[in-house]
Image (cartoon, rainbow, N blue to C red; front, side, top):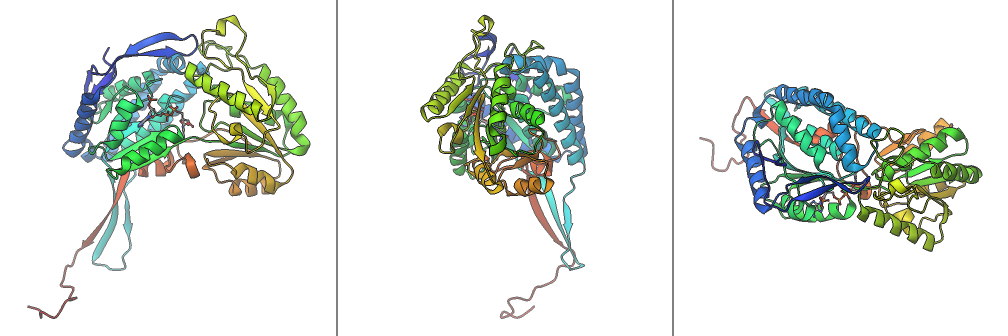
Length: 492
Ligand code: NAP
């Protein structure tokens, strides 16, 4: 089946086909067609024409909202099928994939509601004869480039607000996990997206992503992925001064004070870092623990980490799936070796699993390191895998300093029963999301994004819609008259 969608038609790509691999057992799920340079040109041209001459940007916002609601209904209809495909493609558990589909549905509904009521604003000029208003218009053709860890979810955070605002889009999912992005485009087609409004190109970053970021026909790039790629995209986009929104990595502190309930914090610290095998941008990979609690907490987390059940994401008994690829596992093994070489103490994991049925897949045991210092590579860099590092502190100031001692600034958490302290620490942390006595939840109505090198954009919430809008000021003088600024020529 053709896997590229350009100008309202499913089409074959001129690039080399690629095998999509199931990380549980390295089997081939599907062979997909990929785009070549001519497909990139065709997709941008289709999106350009649909934006410049087509009905979509000029469709009333309420009608665009209707399309998003129809997509939400179709996601509900196909939830099981999509969730299963996401699990096959990424390795995550079916429970997680189902939650992803629910969240994606909620995002489409949220932006449908928001767009329908997004009327811009009037500005009081103090002049009765002037109407000054700020109207919201779409940016134009948006390239949406997404990563492999939450393929469908990350795409929905972009495509729903981009379409709600009236843009046309060219989607470039990760070559590693493209399947559910194709499914979503099929739903957008079924819901009635006009030709050229939504296009999808499969292929790798070098041959499909990069040309989109440089293309003069693309007005905006919205990217989620790693820091180095984000930097390359910002450089590439500078040539045409396109708008760039980048959502990048994180190295997220999880700060625990000793007055917290022990069982609650053990349980949540494990989930914070080991969910989806740690392949989460907001993973709580840096546990920062008050001295008096440190030894007990490390021992219990290590004991529980050793018992996490790895397996097939489709098996309901599985608690964590594999890493996404052999190459990614090799990166994780390199981080483990570097942590040991730099003197971190291995408390749990640090190895591949022994079970015979896990040998074909890209599994790695949840790993815990104590005695970590902030100068260690494993503490400073985003490993994006099942590795927890533990540091310790004695004072609140020290906890804050440690939590902020990172180039990243995506998310963090503080655990304490002292609400005054919780608020102080939450305000002092330089991260885009801070949880107090929790880790991980988000809602479509609240902004998501990073400080510092975690990115420059915001997704979700009203700002997530504004990313895809030009805010144009229209000044309407209803009683025009000569200004009489230059009077030397005399008035006629
Ligand atoms: P990645 O390697 O940076 O790739 C992301 C996307 O960019 C892929 O589609 C990739 O294509 C494409 N790409 C690669 N080089 C490109 C180029 N020169 N020009 C344009 N596109 C290019 O990231 P990943 O490994 O897929 O994802 C993991 C990263 O995403 C982590 O750092 C994680 O923290 C981050 N992330 C951040 C958030 C957030 O909300 N801030 C959410 C999820 C993930 P191919 O891979 O197909 O070649």
